[in-house]
Image (cartoon, rainbow, N blue to C red; front, side):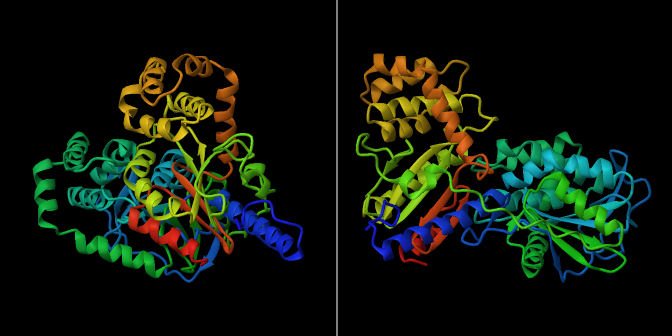
Length: 470
C-alpha cells in the first residue's frame, strides 16, 4: 500500500498517516532552514548557532605593511589562511567555503558586503577564509581553490581580488568541462602573473594544503558549505553558524561575542503547517486528471510506490539540466520504472533565469495534453535555443515535435491562469528551496533532503536507503 495515499480508517492506518504527517512537518522545517551545500545529504545541516569546542585562530597573523584590499588590511594567518581586516581584531569570523557552492555565492552576494562594512572595515572583526571544496558535489571546486592558493603566492591583495572574481563568475566556470582557461583569464584580469600561476598549478604544490584544510574542517564537524565560526580571540571560544544565514543572524552572534557574551540561541523553529501539495491528500493521484496529483502537480511512477520524491526545478538552470539528462534517466530505470519510487515535479523558476517562468508555462500546457515528460525533456535539450527575448515560437515548434496540438498549445501559452500555476509552484517552494534543483525524499520512516544535482551514484544510494526503509 502506498504510504502517501489516503489510508483506510483502521487504527493502524490512521496512526501511519499521522506519523507520516509529523515526519513531513519535521522534514519541511529542516528544508526551510537549509542554506548549505552538503556532502551528507541524508543529514541536513543545522542552522542554529551552537557553541563549539573549536580552537581559536592563531593570533599570529603576519601582514606586510601596506597590504590592503579596498582599504582593508589583508594578509595570511600563521597557518596560511587568507584574512581580511584588523590583524588584532577581538573577534574572528572563520569562513569554511567552496567557490563552486551556490549557497556560498549567495552569502558572498547577499550577506558578506554588510559584514565587511559594519564589522570588518571598522576593525571589530577579522574574516579568515578556509578551503572546503566539496569535490563530490562540485567537480570544478578543487581546481578553483588550487588557483586561488596559487594566486595568493603573489600577494594577499591579489588573492582577495580573485576571491571576488571567482564568486562573481561562478555561473560561467562551474559547468565547464575544463575551467582552466577561465581561471587564467580571471587571474589575469585582477593583475596576477598568469605564467607564474600556471607553473604553480602544474606543480600540484597546493593540493596537500587544501586536503589538510578539508580534514581540519571535518574535524570540526563541518561537511557542508558555507559553514562559519565566530571566535572570541580573548577566550578561544568558538560558535558555529551553518549555512547561508541572513545578515541578522551573523550580526546577532558578532555583537554578542564582541560584548563578551555567548551568542543567544535562536528560538526553536516553529513547525510549519504542511502545505496541501505535500499532504497525503494533496499527493494522492487525481482520478479525473491522469498524471496529476490532487494538488495539480505532475507525477509519474506507481501509485503504490513506498517512496515519493518531490523535485523543485528550473528549466533554465544548468544544474537542473545536468540532473535531468545525466542522472534522472538511470534513476528512472532503477527506481521509478520498477515501482519503488514515485516522482512529483514542481517548477521553481529563479530570478536569474528570465525565460524560466515561460518554460514552466510551456511544460504546464504540454501537461494539459498529456505530454509533460516529453516537453520537460525537450525544454532541457533545447535550452540554448529558447533562451531568447521571446521564446514563444520555439516553444510552439517543440510542441509540434512532441506531438501536441499546436493551436491549442499556443492558446494555452497566452492564458494567464497557466502562468499562475507556475507562480503557485514557486510560491509553494519559496519557504523551503534555496536553489535548484532541490529534492525532498519521503518514505515511511522519514525524509531526506538533496539540495543540488548530485552524481548518480550518490543520488542512487540515497534513494536505495529510502526504499530500504532507512
